[in-house]
Amino acid sequence: MAQLTLEAKKEWAQFLYVENKLTQKEIASKVGVSQKTIGEWKEKYLWENLRRSLLITRKEQLTMIYNQLDAITRNIRDKQDGIPTSRDSDSIMKLTASIKNLETDLSVADVFETGKRFITWIQAIDYEKSKEIVDYFDGLFKE
Image (cartoon, rainbow, N blue to C red; front, top):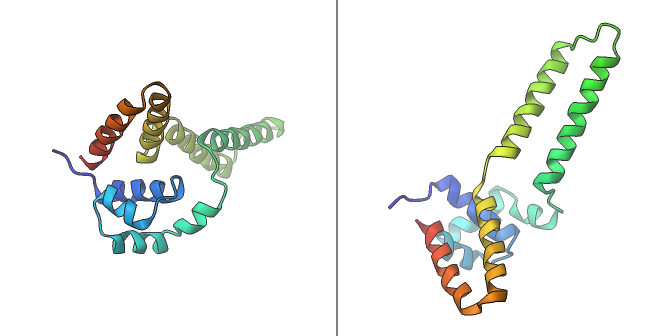
């Protein structure tokens, strides 16, 4: 049985704190670390600030990056020679890498959010079955 890495536990715990607004005790129980560890992560990684902020969705992030890429491309095209500077090229490479990461990488939070939406959908159909699925889903994350 595979164990979650420490990094995955941190990411999951952060998601539970920021998005689900669970208590440190509840998070510690779900993630499998001590309540003290959750408190340390909360302070070190500024989870309270994340909880208070309006988090930008992945779609909004992609839109902003595509707009930045478009602005750089238009700027290059509008120059007389149409040749990008090394700074332009560097920016384009970084922006395209960010796009690739946002479009292809799935974080623990993404998986968790998908599961949460599925469970909410099941609850409307069969509440008792949804409780069973929650147990399975928790088991998946603990594994």
